[in-house]
Amino acid sequence: MKARILLVEDEQLIGAATKKRLEEAGYEVVHSTDGQAAWEQFQLRSFDILLLDVMMPKKDGLTLAQQIREVNGHVPILFLTSKNEKEDRIAGLSIGADDYISKPFSMQELILRIEVFLRRTRATATERANVFTIGKLTFDYEDLRLYNESGEISISLTQKEAELLKYLCNNPNRTLKREEILSQVWGKDDYFLGRSMDVFVTKLRKHFKSDPHIKLETLHGVGFRFNVPGK
Image 1 (tube, rainbow, N blue to C red):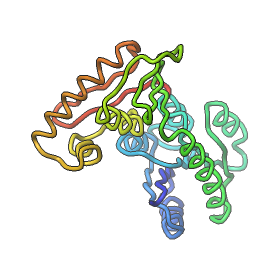
Image 2 (image 1 turned 90 degrees about the vertical axis):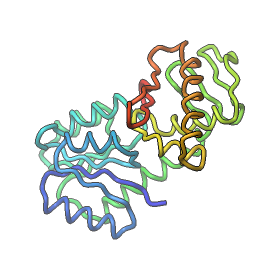
Image 3 (image 1 turned 90 degrees about the horizontal axis):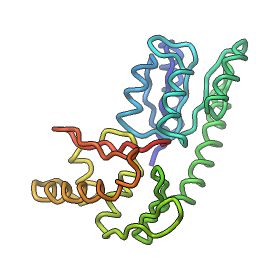
């Protein structure tokens, strides 16, 4: 499966050339030319790494990175900066960016940096593939259990509850369409399975009552959004 990159670069020629070279290297690339468009893309789908320019219209890269870090603490963020933007590099790292690369950069160097972060992310993801922190709760998919802060067993889950919760945990703070969830968790999208999914959603909401910051939001006519702090 191709790694998906969000490239945020307002200079069209640089952005288009970088996107082309990254796609030739085997990545899937979404290119946004301003910070607000990039934020909207980030909310619509998951990304494996973010490449952010600092100076952009509508929303600058520092503001965008800070906004992303409020909802996702894991996705690698690599800033694309000019050599004279030392203060921006320091500011970016202080708000949670992982690294920076100075313009003009070679594509070989950029790809090497990307691969370093992707390998690190994949290793970490493998370690935590089936154990998730959800606010004040811990979800162990293999044991079909939710634990509270003290580590005591609080809730036992059914297999389907666990499968649905795992999918939500893998897609936090995103708009998830009903048909997408049904296809991924139940295997197909039809009316009766949709009604079954609604029942499981109601059950999960009851499980989250011990942490009011966790919200499984219904987006009428669209689907759901699993709002989890710190993701």
